[in-house]
Structures are given as C-alpha cells and as structure tokens.
Image (spheres, rainbow, N blue to C red):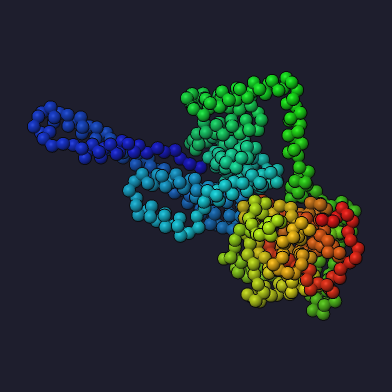
Length: 538
C-alpha cells in the first residue's frame, strides 16, 4: 500500500529566500512600493500553496495512522494467529520497511525533530525489520506459492488453500513482491506478481504504484523468460505512457534485434531443440515428489499402510506397566514410529520460555569443512537446552531413553526449533555420509544412530515431516514425537530416512529433537554383520 505525495520544497524554500533577500529603501520611490504589491501577492500565493501542501501532507499521515491502527487492532486480537499467517507477516514487514519510509518522508517535510528522534530511538533500540527481512518474507511467500500450488490471485485475496486468513494485498503490495523476486533473479515470480499488481491497479480508486513501473518490470522479466514478442509489446505500451522513457527506448531497439535473431533461428529449426533441452533441465522429479508429499497428495502404497497398527508399549519397564506409551506405526523399513502424548503442555511452555531468548538462525554443517553455516534451504531459528537447566528438560531426556531404549550419554542437547514465515528444511539426512569426514568429529561419539522429533504445536496448514524416498508423511500434532533409526544395524546410513520439513503455510510450528549417537549403544543395539544391499549404501 502507499499514497502518492510530492512536497514542493523549491517553492517553500524560495519563499523564505525571498524574505531574506529583500532590501531596504523601497519606500523612496512609488514604483518600488507598487512592485511590493506584486511581491506581496506572490508571497500570499506561495504561502497559500504551502498551507495546502501541509494540509495534504497531514491528511495523508492521518490516512496512514488510521489504516495502521485498524490493521494493528485486528492483529492484537490474536497476536500469535496473526503473525503465524505468512501473508499477514509479509504485509507487517512491508509496512515497516517500504511503507514506513514513505511516512518518514512525509514527516521530514516539516520540522518535527522530536517526533523523528522518537522514531530513531525505536529503530535503534527495538526490533525493526530490515530490507533483508522484507526480501525474506517475499521469498517465503513465493516458496509457499510453489510448494502448495497456490494461485497468485488467491494469495492476493488473503486466501491460503481456500481459507481466507487476512486482508487483500494492494497493487503496491503485489508490486513489491514482484520487485523482490526480480532482485533475486526470479523472473518467473516477478511475472506472476507484476501481472497481479497490474490487475489490482486497474480496480483501485487510488493509484498506489505507477503502471509504467509495472510494465518495465514485466517487459524485462518476460524477455528473460524467453518471450521476446511479448516483451517488445509491453515495452511499446510503456512508451505510450512515457514516450521519452530512456531505458524503454533502448530496450525496444534491443528486443527488436533479438526478435529478428529469434525468427532466424526458428526458420532454421534450431529453436525447438533448445526449448526441449531447457524444459528437460527444468524438470525435477524429486522436487515434485517432495512438494506433492507436502500437499498430502501422495502416500505409501496400500500394501504398507494396511499392515500399520497402533500399540501400547512398555519395553518391560516396570514404570511403563502403569503408563505405557501409545505408539502408532507410520512406516516399515525404515521403521518410523509416532509416540502420542509424550510431552505435556507445561513442558512445552518451559522449553519455549528457555529457548526463545537464545534463538539464532538455524545452521547446517558444511560437508567438506564440518563448519556450521546458514543456508537458504533451512529457514528457521534454533536453540539448545541442557538437562541441568530445568527439571522438565531432564524429564524429556529420560523419556527419550524410555521410548528408544537407547543411552542418552552420547545424545546431543535438546535442540528447539521455531519455523517462521514459510519456514522449512529441504530434504536432508540426519546422519553423516561417508564423504562427510569432519561431521561430528568434535563430539567423538560416532554417527547419529537415531532421531526423536517432538512436535510442540499444532500447525493449521503445512509443516509436515516427509520422507520422499518412501512417500511417507508425519503431520504435526502437539505432544507427539516421531522416532526412527538413521543407521542400519551394520552402521551404514539408511538413505530411506532422507526427510524434509515442509514449509509452514499457516500457523506456527515448534519442534524439538534429540539426536542420539552410536557411542554407548553397543549392547543396546548390537551391530549386525549383514550389510544393506548396494543400492542402499551411501
């Protein structure tokens, strides 16, 4: 959203310069006094123009204040629900970056030093989004759009899979999404969002963005997508609005030249071969499987699911005879189990409270150096908690030991993760593969033999844990935990445990996990001399 306003600084400045530059002795001649009437008329006219400009500025600021207050009051009704919606989150970040910059421009046209000092204090001493945050929010929306096959128009209406969660996006909101995609070299999403911005601009009573800007982005992105004739047509439409647009004039000549070359290639029959190759390069079966699992469109074959059952488990533990675990089988080979009601609400709140102040951007381990680094394929924040910090943490660790019958002496600390806007973790292994020689070297406890993943929140839409190799999915349910072995009995990695955290479409996803290592498990899970088939060896 945005309002168009261009304060006329030169007129106002000239008004004060005129006063300052007036000279004495004008009273000595009548002609000089007559000229003063013309001067006075100019000053009055200039002052009236300044007052009108100030009134227009204040009216715009009132509109911003009313609109922001309306959005803020709606968000305050249920803060967690509001910020967990990716569209609301994007709009919130946008309001405090590009939109707020317009507000600051309006404010700084007047001598509002004290108010600007307050804004500066807030920006320096409180959390305030950066343009990097704006870009991240935009990328998250386009990621959700792709993963869940969301129509651009539906997203712009504030709908996620047919459910309306938020207010509609304005043409300016859509334009900014397209601009961020353009800055990232993502011309596909640039086209989608610039087209939506153009459609919405035609329906809006107030112009929130210039159509010439939309056309310029559309034209170049269309060219980058390979449609030169349409790029040329869009450029000509831009030149109809601004005939002297310098970049458009240059681009038109370039597109005409490229179109001529394109037609020559087409006549030679070479273009078709290049297009086929491009389509083949773009096709990614593994990506499609992962995204289809996230959408819940595919599942394991009936031969597998028909054998799965739910059981009570006590592992021969006297304590568990009184309160056995409720276990649901999610898959065979690899065996994936879901333990129900294994983390209480009080424990969840303790974990959240202790972890939140320590949250940092989640990292991954570089396979070559062993160093931890951030990556775009893992978008979340995480923290680590030790058993001695709180009884609840110690209880959770003991519960993992009871669930798995494995030693916790080689387990890593409890990792707590919160996924943000479109937060995800693309397909990966929890265990270190043979070429990752530096992984877990500092721990000295061997490879990760098993994973226990606790779900600490329900998720309204999305956020499943999926296993693309075996077409299995585990959906978040507060208080449950998933458990699987990452290694075969032989110690070889089980590639069928490759899994991913699907993007969170709506809601907030909290998880915590215990990674258990090989050391001290020698007699609890004895090693087998039988190695897995070659195709399963990593």
